[in-house]
Length: 113
Image 1: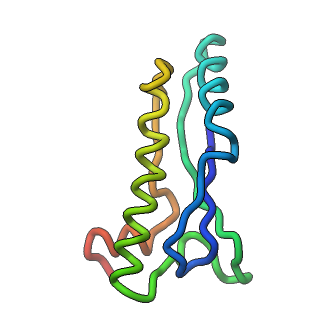
Image 2: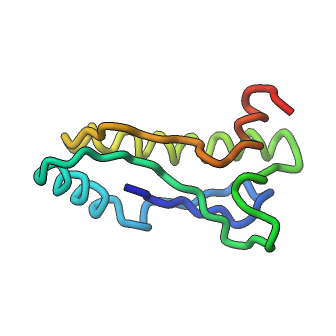
């Protein structure tokens, strides 16, 4: 299951989520998969609204430390929103994947290059 968040550009700390797909559809799909005996992997995904040919979520990078803090706060809310959803609705996922393919933000958070 891939719910999406949208970020306006690689250096914009804003993220928007909750309607692609709508939360009710995510909950319903997880429940239906379980009803059919399937396991579910929840992998929220970041899309960039405005990106040039060489820009993708792997090069997300903020211009200031304040923007990085805002991005991590906003991305954290996005992650926690979807992390809590399956348990709130009694449909636990078998696996969850977070921060895939956002290496610059991961390196920034861990003090890497």
